[in-house]
Length: 264
Image (cartoon, rainbow, N blue to C red):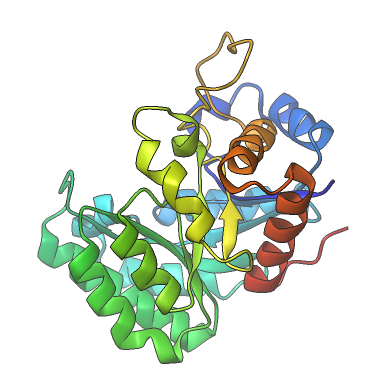
């Protein structure tokens, strides 16, 4: 049963001391591929470098998270564009809008997001997208450029039924994390996932964040890892009525299709 984790922050400091063990556990858990998320210039460059250690297992994204949009200069955008052109970079991002925390002013987020959209069109690669409490502005920009885009995934979807309908209407992929494994916070998401078309569903750990709360026994370290991707599939199976094996086939094929992956 091959699995693809479309979003793991493996350059995060929490993985520095035992990354080899994390990778070994991922491979033992049937992970056929992991896309390492880039969230700024340094992490995107580090992610690309990490892909060279296991080219069959890893690819990555390159971009600026909305949290750091204010610090994103034209020069840095040019540098990220050069990174994004590399063959092991399979998507532009993580990019988008986050009006929940507003770590960067909204005008900076909008400016940087639009430049990422334009870059994705220029290099003909899909997008790895972030949206939190910003659906209206996010959807407006995404819709503006959608016809020219090579597609993309709205990662870690946690929004409303109407937002989901908007993304599906734009023929976007939808990424599901262990948010769905949280009985309280994920209650709405559990009712919505069956509305995601089977050819648009993707799964991701967003490691080291969002450790599945349904894991039993509980890990001693409260850090998420790609090896826990199967737990998300098990919860999805309960919510959708489709078997874990079917969901694995569907999500793996969807990842291959969107990101043009070559699985070994």
